[in-house]
Length: 478
Ligand SMILES: NC(=O)C1=CN([C@@H]2O[C@H](COP(=O)(O)OP(=O)(O)OC[C@H]3O[C@@H](n4cnc5c(N)ncnc54)[C@H](OP(=O)(O)O)[C@@H]3O)[C@@H](O)[C@H]2O)C=CC1
Ligand SMILES: O=C(O)CCC(=O)C(=O)O
Image (tube, helix red, strand yellow):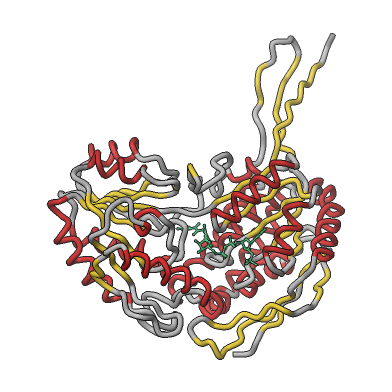
Protein backbone atom coordinates (compact mmCIF):
# COMPACT_ATOMS: atom_id res chain seq x y z
CA UNK A 1 0.00 0.00 0.00
CA UNK A 2 1.26 3.49 -0.77
CA UNK A 3 1.99 6.09 1.88
CA UNK A 4 -0.61 8.86 2.21
CA UNK A 5 0.68 12.42 2.65
CA UNK A 6 -1.75 14.37 4.79
CA UNK A 7 -1.83 18.18 4.80
CA UNK A 8 -3.18 20.59 7.37
CA UNK A 9 -6.49 22.24 6.51
CA UNK A 10 -6.49 25.96 7.28
CA UNK A 11 -9.12 28.40 6.01
CA UNK A 12 -10.16 25.96 3.28
CA UNK A 13 -6.58 25.54 1.99
CA UNK A 14 -4.60 22.34 2.22
CA UNK A 15 -1.14 23.12 3.58
CA UNK A 16 1.39 20.34 2.96
CA UNK A 17 4.10 19.39 5.43
CA UNK A 18 5.95 16.49 6.96
CA UNK A 19 7.72 15.49 10.13
CA UNK A 20 5.23 12.99 11.58
CA UNK A 21 5.51 9.44 10.25
CA UNK A 22 3.08 6.68 11.11
CA UNK A 23 3.98 3.02 10.58
CA UNK A 24 1.55 0.08 10.64
CA UNK A 25 1.69 -1.44 14.15
CA UNK A 26 1.12 -4.90 12.62
CA UNK A 27 3.81 -4.39 9.98
CA UNK A 28 6.54 -2.00 11.11
CA UNK A 29 7.98 -1.82 7.56
CA UNK A 30 4.84 -0.18 6.16
CA UNK A 31 4.83 3.63 6.30
CA UNK A 32 1.09 4.37 6.34
CA UNK A 33 0.96 8.14 6.57
CA UNK A 34 3.06 11.28 6.76
CA UNK A 35 1.63 14.44 8.31
CA UNK A 36 3.02 17.87 9.18
CA UNK A 37 4.73 18.44 12.51
CA UNK A 38 3.21 21.92 12.63
CA UNK A 39 4.37 24.84 14.70
CA UNK A 40 2.38 27.33 16.73
CA UNK A 41 1.97 29.71 13.76
CA UNK A 42 -0.23 27.09 12.01
CA UNK A 43 -2.46 26.99 15.09
CA UNK A 44 -2.70 30.78 15.12
CA UNK A 45 -3.64 30.82 11.43
CA UNK A 46 -6.24 28.09 11.93
CA UNK A 47 -7.85 29.92 14.86
CA UNK A 48 -7.89 33.16 12.83
CA UNK A 49 -9.62 31.34 9.94
CA UNK A 50 -12.11 29.67 12.28
CA UNK A 51 -12.95 32.97 14.00
CA UNK A 52 -13.47 34.71 10.64
CA UNK A 53 -15.76 31.96 9.34
CA UNK A 54 -17.87 31.63 12.49
CA UNK A 55 -20.45 34.46 12.14
CA UNK A 56 -21.55 33.39 8.64
CA UNK A 57 -21.67 29.74 9.66
CA UNK A 58 -23.79 30.56 12.70
CA UNK A 59 -26.10 32.69 10.53
CA UNK A 60 -26.87 29.74 8.28
CA UNK A 61 -30.16 28.10 9.36
CA UNK A 62 -29.46 25.03 11.50
CA UNK A 63 -31.21 22.65 9.04
CA UNK A 64 -28.84 23.92 6.31
CA UNK A 65 -25.84 23.20 8.54
CA UNK A 66 -27.37 19.80 9.24
CA UNK A 67 -27.76 19.07 5.52
CA UNK A 68 -23.97 19.33 5.15
CA UNK A 69 -23.44 16.84 7.98
CA UNK A 70 -25.98 14.49 6.39
CA UNK A 71 -24.23 14.75 3.01
CA UNK A 72 -20.88 14.11 4.71
CA UNK A 73 -22.37 10.96 6.25
CA UNK A 74 -23.29 9.70 2.79
CA UNK A 75 -19.83 10.51 1.40
CA UNK A 76 -18.16 8.67 4.27
CA UNK A 77 -20.57 5.76 3.78
CA UNK A 78 -19.31 5.50 0.18
CA UNK A 79 -15.77 5.12 1.55
CA UNK A 80 -16.65 2.93 4.52
CA UNK A 81 -14.48 -0.05 3.62
CA UNK A 82 -11.47 2.05 2.56
CA UNK A 83 -11.64 4.08 5.77
CA UNK A 84 -12.00 0.92 7.88
CA UNK A 85 -8.96 -0.72 6.24
CA UNK A 86 -6.90 2.44 6.70
CA UNK A 87 -7.95 2.52 10.34
CA UNK A 88 -6.68 -1.04 10.81
CA UNK A 89 -3.35 -0.21 9.13
CA UNK A 90 -2.91 2.91 11.16
CA UNK A 91 -4.20 2.06 14.61
CA UNK A 92 -4.14 -1.74 14.66
CA UNK A 93 -7.70 -2.64 15.61
CA UNK A 94 -9.36 -5.57 13.83
CA UNK A 95 -11.32 -5.06 10.62
CA UNK A 96 -14.73 -5.74 12.26
CA UNK A 97 -13.83 -3.27 15.03
CA UNK A 98 -12.72 -0.71 12.45
CA UNK A 99 -15.85 -1.17 10.35
CA UNK A 100 -17.89 -0.63 13.51
CA UNK A 101 -16.00 2.55 14.33
CA UNK A 102 -16.42 4.04 10.85
CA UNK A 103 -20.11 3.09 10.95
CA UNK A 104 -20.34 4.93 14.26
CA UNK A 105 -18.80 8.09 12.76
CA UNK A 106 -21.33 7.94 9.90
CA UNK A 107 -24.21 7.52 12.35
CA UNK A 108 -22.92 10.37 14.52
CA UNK A 109 -22.97 12.68 11.47
CA UNK A 110 -26.51 11.52 10.67
CA UNK A 111 -27.68 11.97 14.24
CA UNK A 112 -26.37 15.52 14.62
CA UNK A 113 -27.28 16.40 11.03
CA UNK A 114 -30.88 15.61 11.93
CA UNK A 115 -30.55 17.56 15.17
CA UNK A 116 -30.40 20.63 12.92
CA UNK A 117 -34.20 20.32 12.70
CA UNK A 118 -34.62 20.10 16.45
CA UNK A 119 -32.18 22.62 17.96
CA UNK A 120 -34.19 25.11 19.88
CA UNK A 121 -34.94 26.55 23.25
CA UNK A 122 -37.91 26.65 25.57
CA UNK A 123 -40.98 28.85 25.45
CA UNK A 124 -41.94 29.93 28.99
CA UNK A 125 -44.85 31.90 30.45
CA UNK A 126 -43.99 35.41 31.61
CA UNK A 127 -45.25 37.07 34.79
CA UNK A 128 -46.01 40.17 32.66
CA UNK A 129 -49.11 40.56 30.47
CA UNK A 130 -48.74 40.43 26.67
CA UNK A 131 -45.24 39.06 26.99
CA UNK A 132 -43.66 35.85 25.81
CA UNK A 133 -40.32 34.48 26.98
CA UNK A 134 -38.17 32.07 25.09
CA UNK A 135 -34.62 30.82 25.31
CA UNK A 136 -32.17 30.59 22.44
CA UNK A 137 -29.07 28.45 22.13
CA UNK A 138 -26.10 30.54 21.03
CA UNK A 139 -22.84 29.04 19.74
CA UNK A 140 -19.70 29.70 21.76
CA UNK A 141 -17.49 30.62 18.80
CA UNK A 142 -14.34 28.65 18.00
CA UNK A 143 -14.10 25.13 19.45
CA UNK A 144 -10.68 23.50 19.89
CA UNK A 145 -10.86 19.70 19.74
CA UNK A 146 -7.98 17.46 20.86
CA UNK A 147 -8.48 13.79 20.15
CA UNK A 148 -6.71 10.49 20.95
CA UNK A 149 -5.51 7.62 18.76
CA UNK A 150 -7.77 4.87 20.09
CA UNK A 151 -10.96 6.00 18.26
CA UNK A 152 -9.44 8.28 15.61
CA UNK A 153 -12.55 8.67 13.48
CA UNK A 154 -15.41 8.22 15.97
CA UNK A 155 -14.15 10.59 18.67
CA UNK A 156 -13.41 13.49 16.28
CA UNK A 157 -16.89 12.87 14.80
CA UNK A 158 -18.67 12.94 18.13
CA UNK A 159 -16.93 16.17 19.15
CA UNK A 160 -17.09 17.90 15.76
CA UNK A 161 -20.71 17.15 14.84
CA UNK A 162 -22.36 18.79 17.89
CA UNK A 163 -19.89 21.69 17.67
CA UNK A 164 -20.73 22.35 14.02
CA UNK A 165 -24.47 21.80 14.16
CA UNK A 166 -24.78 24.42 16.88
CA UNK A 167 -22.96 27.07 14.83
CA UNK A 168 -19.40 26.87 16.11
CA UNK A 169 -16.34 26.60 13.93
CA UNK A 170 -13.64 24.09 14.74
CA UNK A 171 -9.88 23.69 15.00
CA UNK A 172 -9.02 20.02 15.39
CA UNK A 173 -5.72 18.59 16.57
CA UNK A 174 -5.82 14.85 15.82
CA UNK A 175 -3.57 12.34 17.59
CA UNK A 176 -0.09 12.08 16.11
CA UNK A 177 -0.41 8.33 15.68
CA UNK A 178 -3.60 8.37 13.59
CA UNK A 179 -3.80 11.25 11.09
CA UNK A 180 -5.21 9.16 8.23
CA UNK A 181 -8.44 7.96 9.85
CA UNK A 182 -9.30 11.48 10.94
CA UNK A 183 -8.57 12.65 7.39
CA UNK A 184 -11.38 10.43 6.02
CA UNK A 185 -13.84 12.24 8.25
CA UNK A 186 -12.63 15.76 7.55
CA UNK A 187 -12.47 15.12 3.78
CA UNK A 188 -16.08 13.93 3.81
CA UNK A 189 -17.15 17.18 5.48
CA UNK A 190 -15.17 19.33 3.05
CA UNK A 191 -16.56 17.43 0.05
CA UNK A 192 -20.06 17.86 1.45
CA UNK A 193 -19.63 21.62 1.09
CA UNK A 194 -18.53 22.87 4.49
CA UNK A 195 -17.54 26.52 3.87
CA UNK A 196 -13.83 27.43 4.08
CA UNK A 197 -12.62 28.04 7.62
CA UNK A 198 -15.50 26.25 9.36
CA UNK A 199 -13.33 23.19 9.96
CA UNK A 200 -9.57 23.51 10.34
CA UNK A 201 -7.16 20.67 11.06
CA UNK A 202 -3.64 21.17 12.41
CA UNK A 203 -1.39 18.12 12.76
CA UNK A 204 1.52 18.09 15.15
CA UNK A 205 2.54 17.14 18.64
CA UNK A 206 0.45 17.67 21.71
CA UNK A 207 3.24 19.64 23.33
CA UNK A 208 3.33 22.20 20.49
CA UNK A 209 0.01 22.20 18.61
CA UNK A 210 -2.20 20.97 21.46
CA UNK A 211 -0.69 23.38 23.94
CA UNK A 212 -1.05 26.38 21.55
CA UNK A 213 -4.70 25.54 20.92
CA UNK A 214 -5.47 25.23 24.62
CA UNK A 215 -3.78 28.54 25.44
CA UNK A 216 -5.29 30.62 22.61
CA UNK A 217 -7.82 33.01 24.22
CA UNK A 218 -9.83 33.10 20.99
CA UNK A 219 -10.69 29.41 21.45
CA UNK A 220 -13.89 29.63 23.46
CA UNK A 221 -14.23 25.93 24.21
CA UNK A 222 -11.80 23.03 24.41
CA UNK A 223 -12.94 19.42 24.30
CA UNK A 224 -10.28 16.76 24.98
CA UNK A 225 -10.19 12.98 25.22
CA UNK A 226 -7.01 11.23 26.33
CA UNK A 227 -4.85 10.61 29.36
CA UNK A 228 -5.76 11.87 32.81
CA UNK A 229 -2.44 13.67 33.27
CA UNK A 230 -2.79 15.73 30.10
CA UNK A 231 -6.54 16.21 30.53
CA UNK A 232 -6.22 17.67 34.01
CA UNK A 233 -3.56 20.11 32.86
CA UNK A 234 -5.72 21.24 29.95
CA UNK A 235 -8.70 21.65 32.27
CA UNK A 236 -6.73 23.94 34.60
CA UNK A 237 -5.28 26.02 31.77
CA UNK A 238 -8.61 26.65 30.05
CA UNK A 239 -10.40 27.36 33.33
CA UNK A 240 -7.72 29.91 34.25
CA UNK A 241 -8.54 31.89 31.11
CA UNK A 242 -12.28 31.39 31.78
CA UNK A 243 -12.86 29.27 28.66
CA UNK A 244 -15.27 26.35 28.61
CA UNK A 245 -13.60 22.96 28.93
CA UNK A 246 -14.63 19.32 28.74
CA UNK A 247 -12.11 16.55 29.41
CA UNK A 248 -12.80 12.83 29.08
CA UNK A 249 -9.94 10.82 30.52
CA UNK A 250 -9.06 7.43 31.95
CA UNK A 251 -10.89 4.63 33.69
CA UNK A 252 -10.26 1.58 35.87
CA UNK A 253 -13.52 -0.05 34.95
CA UNK A 254 -14.71 -3.07 36.89
CA UNK A 255 -16.94 -5.93 35.82
CA UNK A 256 -18.57 -7.62 38.81
CA UNK A 257 -19.53 -11.28 38.46
CA UNK A 258 -21.97 -12.55 41.09
CA UNK A 259 -22.45 -16.18 42.15
CA UNK A 260 -25.73 -16.43 40.23
CA UNK A 261 -24.26 -15.26 36.90
CA UNK A 262 -24.12 -17.40 33.76
CA UNK A 263 -20.37 -18.11 33.94
CA UNK A 264 -19.81 -18.71 30.21
CA UNK A 265 -21.67 -15.51 29.33
CA UNK A 266 -19.73 -13.57 31.99
CA UNK A 267 -16.42 -14.78 30.52
CA UNK A 268 -17.50 -13.70 27.02
CA UNK A 269 -18.49 -10.28 28.39
CA UNK A 270 -15.17 -9.97 30.23
CA UNK A 271 -13.03 -10.73 27.15
CA UNK A 272 -15.10 -8.44 24.92
CA UNK A 273 -14.58 -5.59 27.41
CA UNK A 274 -11.01 -6.53 28.41
CA UNK A 275 -9.35 -7.76 25.22
CA UNK A 276 -11.58 -6.34 22.48
CA UNK A 277 -9.92 -3.20 21.02
CA UNK A 278 -6.71 -4.65 22.53
CA UNK A 279 -7.92 -3.26 25.87
CA UNK A 280 -7.19 0.22 24.54
CA UNK A 281 -10.46 1.88 25.47
CA UNK A 282 -11.21 4.22 28.32
CA UNK A 283 -14.23 1.97 29.01
CA UNK A 284 -12.20 -1.30 28.95
CA UNK A 285 -12.89 -3.84 31.72
CA UNK A 286 -9.50 -3.97 33.37
CA UNK A 287 -10.76 -5.36 36.70
CA UNK A 288 -13.12 -8.27 37.22
CA UNK A 289 -14.51 -8.66 40.74
CA UNK A 290 -15.92 -12.11 41.54
CA UNK A 291 -17.90 -13.29 44.53
CA UNK A 292 -16.46 -16.51 46.07
CA UNK A 293 -18.91 -19.07 44.65
CA UNK A 294 -18.12 -18.15 41.05
CA UNK A 295 -14.43 -17.19 41.20
CA UNK A 296 -12.73 -20.45 40.20
CA UNK A 297 -15.25 -21.40 37.50
CA UNK A 298 -15.11 -17.88 36.10
CA UNK A 299 -11.30 -17.82 35.95
CA UNK A 300 -11.32 -21.20 34.14
CA UNK A 301 -13.89 -19.91 31.62
CA UNK A 302 -11.96 -16.66 31.21
CA UNK A 303 -8.71 -18.50 30.43
CA UNK A 304 -10.54 -20.51 27.74
CA UNK A 305 -12.06 -17.38 26.18
CA UNK A 306 -8.79 -15.42 26.40
CA UNK A 307 -7.03 -18.11 24.33
CA UNK A 308 -9.19 -17.06 21.35
CA UNK A 309 -7.74 -13.54 21.48
CA UNK A 310 -4.29 -14.44 20.14
CA UNK A 311 -2.96 -11.12 18.78
CA UNK A 312 -2.49 -10.73 15.04
CA UNK A 313 -2.81 -8.42 12.06
CA UNK A 314 -6.27 -6.88 12.23
CA UNK A 315 -6.72 -7.34 8.48
CA UNK A 316 -6.28 -11.12 8.68
CA UNK A 317 -9.40 -13.29 8.77
CA UNK A 318 -10.35 -14.43 12.23
CA UNK A 319 -8.11 -12.04 14.20
CA UNK A 320 -9.98 -11.08 17.36
CA UNK A 321 -7.31 -8.77 18.77
CA UNK A 322 -4.84 -6.48 17.03
CA UNK A 323 -1.42 -5.28 18.19
CA UNK A 324 -0.75 -2.65 20.82
CA UNK A 325 -0.74 0.75 19.09
CA UNK A 326 2.92 1.76 19.58
CA UNK A 327 6.23 0.87 21.21
CA UNK A 328 5.64 3.58 23.79
CA UNK A 329 2.23 2.16 24.71
CA UNK A 330 3.70 -1.36 24.85
CA UNK A 331 6.40 -0.13 27.24
CA UNK A 332 3.69 1.30 29.52
CA UNK A 333 1.68 -1.92 29.48
CA UNK A 334 4.64 -4.27 29.96
CA UNK A 335 5.88 -2.10 32.85
CA UNK A 336 2.47 -2.57 34.50
CA UNK A 337 2.69 -6.34 33.90
CA UNK A 338 6.17 -6.52 35.42
CA UNK A 339 5.02 -4.51 38.42
CA UNK A 340 2.17 -7.01 38.91
CA UNK A 341 4.72 -9.85 38.72
CA UNK A 342 6.81 -8.17 41.41
CA UNK A 343 3.67 -7.79 43.54
CA UNK A 344 3.14 -11.57 43.41
CA UNK A 345 0.48 -11.89 40.70
CA UNK A 346 -0.36 -15.31 39.30
CA UNK A 347 -0.48 -15.29 35.50
CA UNK A 348 -3.61 -17.29 34.66
CA UNK A 349 -2.94 -16.28 31.04
CA UNK A 350 -0.18 -14.31 29.33
CA UNK A 351 3.03 -13.09 30.92
CA UNK A 352 5.30 -14.05 28.01
CA UNK A 353 7.43 -11.45 26.24
CA UNK A 354 5.57 -10.00 23.23
CA UNK A 355 6.69 -10.39 19.63
CA UNK A 356 6.97 -6.86 18.25
CA UNK A 357 3.69 -5.19 19.31
CA UNK A 358 1.76 -8.47 19.60
CA UNK A 359 1.01 -8.77 23.30
CA UNK A 360 -0.89 -11.87 24.46
CA UNK A 361 -4.06 -11.37 26.52
CA UNK A 362 -3.03 -11.36 30.16
CA UNK A 363 -5.14 -12.49 33.13
CA UNK A 364 -3.79 -11.72 36.59
CA UNK A 365 -5.08 -13.32 39.78
CA UNK A 366 -3.97 -13.48 43.39
CA UNK A 367 -3.63 -9.71 43.81
CA UNK A 368 -5.38 -7.58 46.40
CA UNK A 369 -7.22 -4.28 46.00
CA UNK A 370 -4.13 -2.27 46.99
CA UNK A 371 -1.98 -3.59 44.15
CA UNK A 372 -1.08 -1.32 41.24
CA UNK A 373 -2.78 -3.66 38.73
CA UNK A 374 -6.02 -3.34 40.71
CA UNK A 375 -5.87 0.45 40.88
CA UNK A 376 -4.06 1.98 37.92
CA UNK A 377 -5.24 2.31 34.34
CA UNK A 378 -3.17 0.01 32.08
CA UNK A 379 -4.78 0.61 28.65
CA UNK A 380 -3.79 -2.73 27.16
CA UNK A 381 -5.00 -6.36 27.10
CA UNK A 382 -4.61 -7.00 30.83
CA UNK A 383 -7.44 -8.10 33.13
CA UNK A 384 -6.97 -8.37 36.90
CA UNK A 385 -9.38 -10.71 38.71
CA UNK A 386 -10.16 -9.74 42.31
CA UNK A 387 -12.51 -11.17 44.91
CA UNK A 388 -15.27 -9.64 47.04
CA UNK A 389 -17.35 -11.38 49.71
CA UNK A 390 -20.70 -10.19 48.36
CA UNK A 391 -22.46 -7.54 46.26
CA UNK A 392 -21.95 -4.81 48.87
CA UNK A 393 -18.21 -5.42 49.10
CA UNK A 394 -18.05 -5.54 45.29
CA UNK A 395 -19.75 -2.13 45.06
CA UNK A 396 -17.30 -0.79 47.65
CA UNK A 397 -14.42 -2.14 45.55
CA UNK A 398 -15.79 -0.62 42.34
CA UNK A 399 -15.96 2.73 44.12
CA UNK A 400 -12.49 2.40 45.65
CA UNK A 401 -10.90 4.15 42.67
CA UNK A 402 -9.88 7.65 41.64
CA UNK A 403 -11.76 6.97 38.38
CA UNK A 404 -15.49 6.60 37.72
CA UNK A 405 -16.18 5.93 34.08
CA UNK A 406 -17.92 2.57 33.50
CA UNK A 407 -18.85 -0.49 35.54
CA UNK A 408 -20.49 -3.79 34.60
CA UNK A 409 -22.39 -6.49 36.44
CA UNK A 410 -23.14 -10.11 35.48
CA UNK A 411 -26.16 -11.44 37.33
CA UNK A 412 -29.61 -12.94 36.81
CA UNK A 413 -30.95 -11.05 39.84
CA UNK A 414 -32.91 -7.89 38.98
CA UNK A 415 -32.77 -6.57 42.55
CA UNK A 416 -28.98 -6.94 42.57
CA UNK A 417 -28.81 -5.10 39.23
CA UNK A 418 -30.85 -2.22 40.62
CA UNK A 419 -28.79 -2.04 43.80
CA UNK A 420 -25.58 -2.04 41.73
CA UNK A 421 -26.80 0.67 39.33
CA UNK A 422 -27.71 2.88 42.29
CA UNK A 423 -24.58 2.15 44.34
CA UNK A 424 -21.70 2.51 41.92
CA UNK A 425 -20.13 5.92 41.35
CA UNK A 426 -19.57 5.81 37.60
CA UNK A 427 -20.99 7.51 34.52
CA UNK A 428 -22.04 4.32 32.69
CA UNK A 429 -23.48 1.10 34.15
CA UNK A 430 -23.82 -2.03 32.00
CA UNK A 431 -25.71 -5.08 33.27
CA UNK A 432 -24.96 -8.32 31.39
CA UNK A 433 -23.21 -6.30 28.67
CA UNK A 434 -19.51 -5.40 28.13
CA UNK A 435 -18.33 -2.13 29.68
CA UNK A 436 -17.09 -1.03 26.22
CA UNK A 437 -19.36 -0.06 23.34
CA UNK A 438 -21.63 2.92 23.78
CA UNK A 439 -24.74 3.95 21.91
CA UNK A 440 -24.19 7.26 20.12
CA UNK A 441 -27.56 8.65 21.22
CA UNK A 442 -26.83 8.12 24.95
CA UNK A 443 -25.01 10.69 27.12
CA UNK A 444 -21.46 9.61 27.95
CA UNK A 445 -18.98 10.76 30.58
CA UNK A 446 -17.65 9.87 33.98
CA UNK A 447 -17.04 11.17 37.47
CA UNK A 448 -13.90 11.53 39.62
CA UNK A 449 -10.67 11.66 37.64
CA UNK A 450 -12.36 10.20 34.56
CA UNK A 451 -14.08 13.34 33.44
CA UNK A 452 -14.70 17.01 34.01
CA UNK A 453 -18.21 15.75 34.92
CA UNK A 454 -19.95 18.90 33.79
CA UNK A 455 -21.20 18.50 30.23
CA UNK A 456 -21.76 15.03 28.75
CA UNK A 457 -20.69 13.95 25.27
CA UNK A 458 -22.89 12.10 22.76
CA UNK A 459 -26.65 12.10 22.46
CA UNK A 460 -28.72 15.27 22.02
CA UNK A 461 -27.27 16.73 25.25
CA UNK A 462 -23.82 16.96 23.61
CA UNK A 463 -24.78 20.36 22.13
CA UNK A 464 -25.07 21.80 25.66
CA UNK A 465 -21.28 22.02 25.89
CA UNK A 466 -21.05 23.93 22.62
CA UNK A 467 -23.83 26.47 23.33
CA UNK A 468 -24.91 29.07 25.87
CA UNK A 469 -28.46 29.97 26.73
CA UNK A 470 -29.98 33.40 26.16
CA UNK A 471 -33.43 34.39 27.51
CA UNK A 472 -35.53 36.66 25.30
CA UNK A 473 -38.61 38.61 26.53
CA UNK A 474 -40.97 39.64 23.71
CA UNK A 475 -43.62 42.11 24.76
CA UNK A 476 -46.49 43.71 22.85
CA UNK A 477 -49.20 46.25 23.88
CA UNK A 478 -48.45 48.73 26.66
N1 LIG B 1 -9.42 8.13 27.63
C1 LIG B 1 -9.02 7.69 26.46
O1 LIG B 1 -9.82 7.43 25.62
C2 LIG B 1 -7.57 7.59 26.16
C3 LIG B 1 -6.66 7.44 27.16
N2 LIG B 1 -5.35 7.34 26.87
C4 LIG B 1 -4.44 7.16 28.00
O2 LIG B 1 -3.32 7.99 27.80
C5 LIG B 1 -2.13 7.26 27.83
C6 LIG B 1 -1.11 7.87 26.89
O3 LIG B 1 -1.63 7.96 25.57
P1 LIG B 1 -1.40 9.28 24.75
O4 LIG B 1 -1.78 9.11 23.35
O5 LIG B 1 0.01 9.73 24.98
O6 LIG B 1 -2.45 10.26 25.43
P2 LIG B 1 -2.42 11.82 25.51
O7 LIG B 1 -3.32 12.27 26.58
O8 LIG B 1 -1.01 12.29 25.55
O9 LIG B 1 -2.98 12.23 24.07
C7 LIG B 1 -4.30 12.59 23.76
C8 LIG B 1 -4.29 13.81 22.84
O10 LIG B 1 -3.78 14.94 23.55
C9 LIG B 1 -2.65 15.48 22.87
N3 LIG B 1 -1.73 16.07 23.82
C10 LIG B 1 -0.66 15.48 24.42
N4 LIG B 1 -0.04 16.37 25.23
C11 LIG B 1 -0.73 17.53 25.14
C12 LIG B 1 -0.57 18.82 25.74
N5 LIG B 1 0.41 19.09 26.59
N6 LIG B 1 -1.46 19.79 25.43
C13 LIG B 1 -2.48 19.55 24.57
N7 LIG B 1 -2.66 18.34 23.96
C14 LIG B 1 -1.81 17.34 24.25
C15 LIG B 1 -2.10 14.29 22.12
O11 LIG B 1 -1.24 14.67 21.08
P3 LIG B 1 -0.17 13.61 20.54
O12 LIG B 1 -0.91 12.57 19.83
O13 LIG B 1 0.65 14.42 19.64
O14 LIG B 1 0.58 13.11 21.73
C16 LIG B 1 -3.38 13.64 21.62
O15 LIG B 1 -3.91 14.34 20.54
C17 LIG B 1 -2.56 5.85 27.49
O16 LIG B 1 -1.70 4.91 28.02
C18 LIG B 1 -3.90 5.77 28.12
O17 LIG B 1 -3.76 5.44 29.48
C19 LIG B 1 -4.90 7.40 25.58
C20 LIG B 1 -5.77 7.55 24.54
C21 LIG B 1 -7.18 7.63 24.77
O1 LIG C 1 -16.36 2.08 24.58
C1 LIG C 1 -16.65 2.94 23.76
O2 LIG C 1 -17.51 2.74 22.89
C2 LIG C 1 -16.02 4.32 23.81
C3 LIG C 1 -14.69 4.34 24.49
C4 LIG C 1 -14.09 5.68 24.49
O3 LIG C 1 -14.77 6.68 24.41
C5 LIG C 1 -12.64 5.84 24.62
O4 LIG C 1 -11.93 4.84 24.76
O5 LIG C 1 -12.18 6.99 24.55
